[in-house]
Amino acid sequence: MIRARWGISGLAAVLLVAWGCEGGGGRPSVSSSMEEATVKGTVTAKGTPVTKGTITFDPANVNRKVGPRTAQIGSDGTYTIKTLIGENTVIVSGPTISRDPNLAQNSKTVDVQSGDNQVAIELAPTAP
Image (cartoon, rainbow, N blue to C red; front, side, top):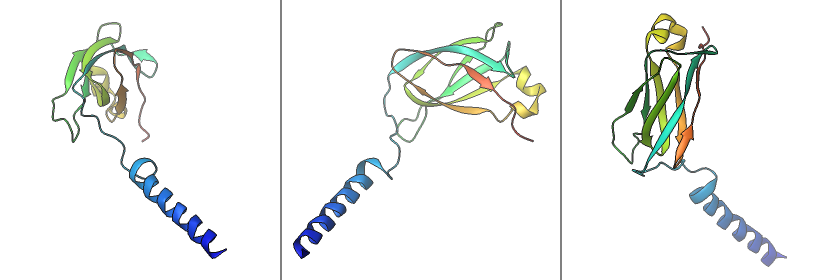
């Protein structure tokens, strides 16, 4: 009986160590990849296409010290940009955002995958 308890306790300790090192409570992985991918999409604010401005994808993190990538937003609200795969912080700027301060705090995180990506960016007003 005592041997069985020690066996269960030992197994539990091994599982806790493995869980802490790999899966449960550790930090999320941060990409160090320098692979580029294309991202296309439409920027809208309150359901209407944003027709002027820029969209910036920033792939920088602790593993890769790179600058942000910026593209113009087309007159139909569409954009095309090349950026690094992995998490990117996305910020939209332009006249629509300048006119409505409730849209100014809209940064988003997008996980860019290998290949072509379709990412619609909807700017929603922040709560007052």
